[in-house]
Image (tube, rainbow, N blue to C red):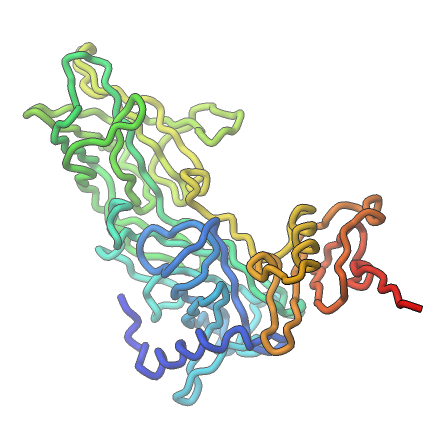
Length: 420
């Protein structure tokens, strides 16, 4: 699925990005700069389960409305947390600019960002076998992340920060035993999930929708000795395409060991295990995009005609599981703690630039910092005691928010006392 149009010249252009992108400052009609965030540092993000964290490196694709009136696509290579899209023009490559894009009928620029490897299809992307269900331990597990931003054409143009979300489904399994005659320790066990769709057909870049195929099959999830975790056994999680189950041929779980097979139909309801107060069971109709399902099976020899007893399926938002997920947080100031740490670090001598980079960006040429505010910090009642910067050699982008009621940079700076 590698983009066929990526020539040696194109690759050389992306090498230029890595060396020079921090020298580029986006302007209203200038180059477009992109940031995207996860919860922890992420490395190269193409296929494979996407690690949580701020996107530092990796290749993505940006789709946008072009002057031709169609959706166009360009590659974005991230280095040091920033990405600059490049487009081809007259046989050469240059940075994408705002005036390369055409607003829609509502006067908005609608941009999407994803980690697919397809660089040819701006709207509907064929998936197929390359994105088949896989264990998270498979280096090619097809985790798809996607985000969309709508920006008014007449709005002030700055960094475009994306909130990225998982568009596949994640599945885990817990196996417990309630019969003394069943022993799983050190046994070779084969686990199979039956009557599910393993291969998606397409991905829509505009909507972020993964469409599953119509063919139902059996997927061997695991073969080997199970890992014990507390009072149950587990296998590595899997990523599946989102799908609706065949209600007349509902999925079954089959567990085989010692020449015996235990099989049962999945429970048809699930409960929220995300810590919310509402744990009312809801119908389990399929695998939902961006959700992590934990299937819970109990092996039994004591219930007539029932070999596998299924407890309610646990469901959570994927990002709430094991620290994996998206909290799309662009570098900037969000809390009073952020602001206090920023001021204290800025006032230090020497400054810890790794801390300052959490809140803004330094211009290498001038050495001046630009910080971004993305939430209201405190209110006017706290202005008298708010921390202040030692000097005004920085830029503060307020983005319509305030710091203790203050909306101008000068009020954030300590008064300079001139010696007599």
